[in-house]
Length: 259
Length: 259
DNA sequence: CGGGTCATTGATACGTATCAATGTGCGTGG
DNA sequence: CCACGCACATTGATACGTATCAATGACCCG
Image 1 (cartoon, each protein chain N blue to C red):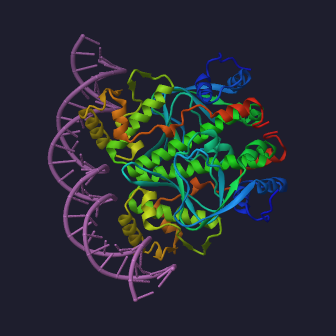
Image 2: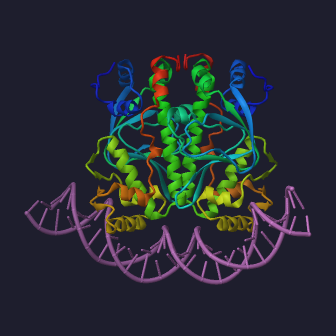
Image 3: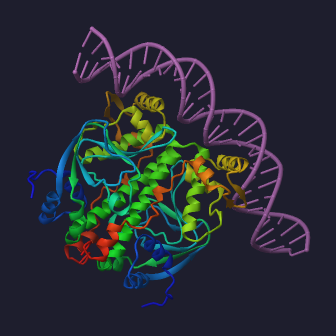
């Protein structure tokens, strides 16, 4: 058994507990699954598309994103990964992973013992349910991104991204009042939103001109969140940040669920 | 116990078995979960966005799609649902569902006993694994759609959709040679791809002119699949249509997985 | 046979990409 | 400590892909 201190997986546990409280045994079990920690510099690949053997890992500190490269040279950023976000069991259930993951800034990740995770999760029903919820939440974020890219103009997309970043970063304690450090360059922002770097910049400036944000050196301040949300048509419901419905808590606590 | 004949859930079972063989007991159990069958006419809502109580259902015959409506009146189609496709546990784990589902043509759905599904799935590890795989597969399709909408031009998007439809419809036996009936109008196609109805039509005509497809009355014929795939930059890997890796089969059959 | 939905086509407007140049801040090595 | 270099941000001019508007055409169903 390795010694990592008790705080390493905390971001993931906090995230799961935001949905559903976990018994101490579950938390200890999760912490015990850590194989090792790795540090990555900014803009380096953690996983490359097509890789077969990638295991499961959790972002502990820093920021990463999933992406695809097209044959015409274009890049699409699919989703962002903050502290507490984890990868899936691609290598086990699917064959090759269909996208790469790279770091936005210097990032620490924890590698998870995949075999034990799969073999022993059955003894931790609360974790099982929380991970299931997490998967649905991820899907919802992808659907919202499709909607934004497909049917909103560039202005609303940029505003939408700033709203989403604010909510998600606040959840991991990376906001101060209405301010946060945007973890992406404007080129990355364009690649996430399906617009060009130049146009991303123009929309950012326009948001600034219209007093919806203050933007300087990647620090974003949102003086009027409701106004920005309105410009973005941002609802926030899709992030599904509520805790579990009471029925789930009841069922888990009385062992009727996943007995 | 209700009598539905034995064939009702077959599309779902076939889909799951395409990934991993299921013991007879699992199949009987799944069939027993059916609460009732419902018929929907074309273009009718099965679930509306924001609905709280929606259960779980499986498309038995016909075609449906998930969608969102924006406040500016736009519609984004998120994903298609063919025979064997099912909804998630939104109402249980999340609160309201974040998208609606409507039928593309006349459609039959089976309602599933959600409580029994959750309570008893633990006794059916093969089903559990197969559903897990299914969730990852769905996510992969969403990621591919983001990539297509974000970074491909309209021409490639339309070609891509035609490739995806061909693969997915073939899996449920709805292709004949290189032909199939496209289950969407051109307006729906536009809403799925983030382009206008008119432009979808123009791209379809262009594909026809360039001899990559023959299109008439929504019947698509693909004389040279490789050529169309090339125009679409379509890989097909993202659909993850392979069966389970050997390691999964071994683990399940020896009960090492999910003991 | 008439009305409705869906497909098709043309003309025009507009959002966004692209190209190219300049500006700004920051880390590094001399 | 300064100057260089590099990555990132900003701005303008222009080209192009796609939306929009409007009208006609084809097919299906009752």
